[in-house]
Image 1 (spheres, helix red, strand yellow):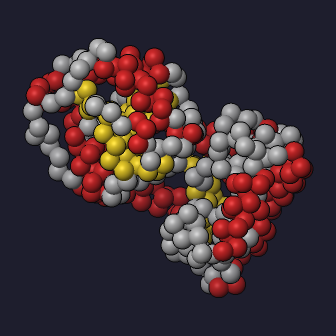
Image 2 (spheres, one colour):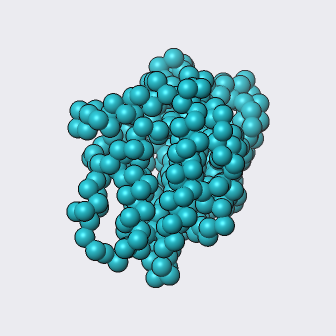
Length: 359
């Protein structure tokens, strides 16, 4: 396994100063202030891994490559190695953004890109063209997407159109599928509990304020509800029925899911967020925004609700909070069983074995 840094640039900004500088310029100089998703423009021209150190191997499996390998370096690698590339966002097939936030210019040529300021828009168009040419030359590449939504977006792009893309859900940490949390709490005596998890609760893309608004409206119908927020920030949301816990480690997060009835994911830009699978593996019903690959996750699980507004979220929360405790208990058991089958590491290994065998 090769990586440029062990954590991330925000945590260790001086571990790779050039990458930090490029990322900072992307975020604060090139990016349009009103665009709320990350971009990789300058960072895409940096190489953090020396390709000459990669020995001949049967398969090279790529995940995040921004700042690690340039598209031209990957083109050279693919000429002598079989490549499996798992997409985790839209960046491979857009000119610069990781999520287009509804923009469809990547299906054409990324002209007048809304993600960057006007002086830099021509470079976005050139970068997209660079990706189109390189991927055209990378014939021995097997593409994988964690969600049907991302696979569909990729198939509509100029970079990956007419390419076959396999869908394999991201697996969750074994902690979430190995815990024996046969529900021993007395549902009838417990208040209805909801949880929202975000790395940064103040990130505008995560729309935590919408989730909180939906919950607060629920309190008017039920006084036995409680909301827990997990992640950095979020102090402004704290209240009598809202607990802000800050970041939690894996074990602490698993314990939180064991006590929650539902997980609310109000984000406006997501691919296939692991937090939905993690929570479902411990019995939480997902209530998700109608965005990205989240509705398909709810559909595949067979449980949960998709909403488009705070009002719709409130209606879903009221419905779940007023449901019979025995029904909630049964639902938790069923969703837990389904999620563990879909998102276990063993399930992902079995599917990737088939991909490796077919390349």
